[in-house]
Length: 296
Image (cartoon, rainbow, N blue to C red; front, side, top):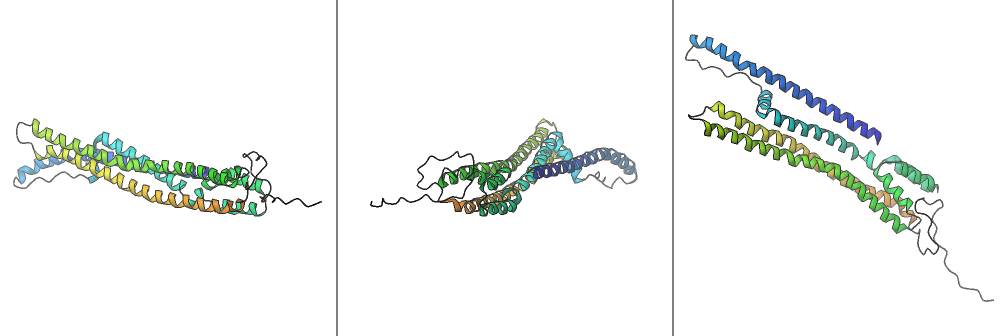
């Protein structure tokens, strides 16, 4: 579990560093493209005398620099924060929803070997020390086994529901990002269109197309980036949710299969049950049947 957490943090840091490098590259491109229009204007003035009929070429600008300039600092910080969070959540959920973390094969083999050798205390210690989904379920079942098999199954179901809720709770943040991102993009769309119409309303003459292009580009780029974040977030949420559901079902099948040998525990029990906090230390046996009194 600790190794998985360390790997998740490492993957999250690498993803954050990668996106930070992209953002720094975008800022450098933006600084370069801001200086290019002035240079292009000076060159255009010198060429206008020689070729007055030739149209001036538009200044060179990359798509990344144009996008960063259209989004501005506000939307850029918001979308970068959502991207950082998405990368970190994706790495963490991929690690926690893996088979080695939910249904470790070594735990199944060791637990079954202890049960076959009738070493029930060792089986309980093995399941209790394991932090996986299956380990928590098996330890809860063994702790309640001396009360009865049905109580043990109920305890296993309660722990299984709790662990399943933890996994789904982590996955829900991916769905939340997939819902928020297009909403922020829609907000930017309305914001950009309001800016464009404000230019039209406040202009005494007919506004130039370049003045309207700023608000329109903001509207389009915020929508594009919002969808660009939301689509992989929703896809990852659905894929990981299906994997979690399949692994939870496998945990239920494996745990009930391992505990099925204790079905007779607690049947027709007449003496008070021992403390449920400790696992059984002797193999389960069915209670003796009553015999009729022999005639004297």
